[in-house]
Amino acid sequence: MTPFAKPGASATYDVMAADAVRRALTDAGLELTDIDQAYASYVFGDSTSGQRGLYHVGKTGMPIVNVNNNCSSGSTALWLATQAVRSGTADCALAFGFGFGFGFGFEQIQRGALNMMWTDRPSPAQEFIDVVGRRYEGTEQPMRAKSRAVDSVPGQGSSPPRVGRG
Image 1 (cartoon, rainbow, N blue to C red):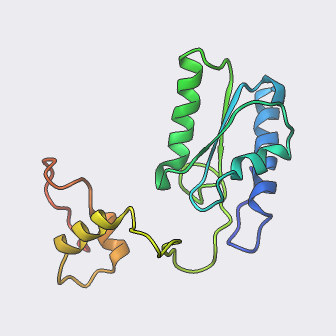
Image 2: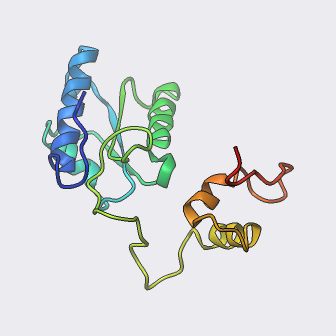
């Protein structure tokens, strides 16, 4: 396993990714040249973080697809790699990532609470934030607890979840 530590106490994301990919290839008995496509998942990273991590292992000319799908980034990368193999597009595909606790990998995030990165544009999560705010208006739970309690999109047939009860 590639060790994971709190922000600032571990190697940089690209070094950890390269280490994990090397270990995975060794474990599978493969060389980088056996991989036809790679899918790199992350949440907080620049647009070509996957290339940065994989280039430490080698450069073969394979396509490297960067996947940023918030908490689903790791599972999305794995699904895409699986689809590439199932469809016959690739004989062997690699999914690796930087999603701090979201599926696989390691992310080099900043210390403290997670905040919006770009405050000069509408938040893609604003509709969700509004729904959660309306659903739990007047409760004492912090936003994080409220958002974890939402189990579906309103109108999809599930009852409101219980927040803060045993």
